[in-house]
Length: 416
View 1 (tube, rainbow, N blue to C red):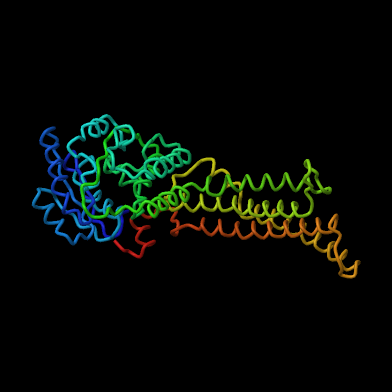
View 2: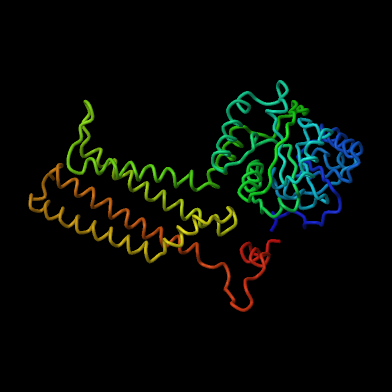
């Protein structure tokens, strides 16, 4: 599979491709290419310098060609799209990518090559260990944004990387291509690290330096917009942290609080919790159940369509939660709710449809509505999960499944 608009993959014929995504980098591109070519000459590595041009209008393409680089056109806009086109067109077994703005020194890539030759599939630069020159990174990015997003990435995915968003990184080309990277924006950097970690690929980290941007124009990076895109990606790729853990916390706290208030008011010091707190507990139960259902559905969807690698534990849970079992449990909850609701209506009628007794009838009504809503939620979630589980193609027992590219053409209307 490949990103639409990227060139057809080529077989590696060189050891190293030094890849630079480019969008109007004429001011600094020649110097970056020069340093990269000097590195290849100094080390004797058989390699190339490849520029993935993303629609430059300032003559960057000609600058790249005049400086001795090969140029590939990335027709789809975006940082990730440009890199995907470059990776597909690279002739090297290994690829080292970096921004063409003089912030990274392409003449000092020895540690990356050494780590790749040593067996690492992804080698990340770490600017915090190598050194960040004054003015090279905004204070907010350096002390808040990058450390926070890196911490989230390490927590969610158990990644060993200490600088998630370093733009200078090396990797084995075919292994990264097989990860089926999909994002087209700045979050491409996070996707590469996350998917490599989830796939169990050998990941290494080497110190690297960051210098001030050599361009006089404003950089393409937008800290808040791109920071949000990275955070959004990390959340979407981790249904556990986005849905499951919050759902379990809400469901557990709701059940505990509801059980404590089921028999009547609860005094905690000077505060007295009563019917309103019971209603809050019911809300927590409803949202918690729906959040857990979203986690299971999201995991099934992400695994089925190749966003997240399969998990044995999730597979066992999903197999146990068949549609029939979910529907049976949902029907039981709905019946409990209807019976309780019927009793409440009869009590209401007995009182002449006046005020209900908060101490007894209102509690029963809250229980009735909670079980009804949760039962309906589970029923709809069960059907949604089963819809996702419908096969993508007609299974043939004798012939087996069609090849991956055939599935992809079906899915995307033969866009390739």
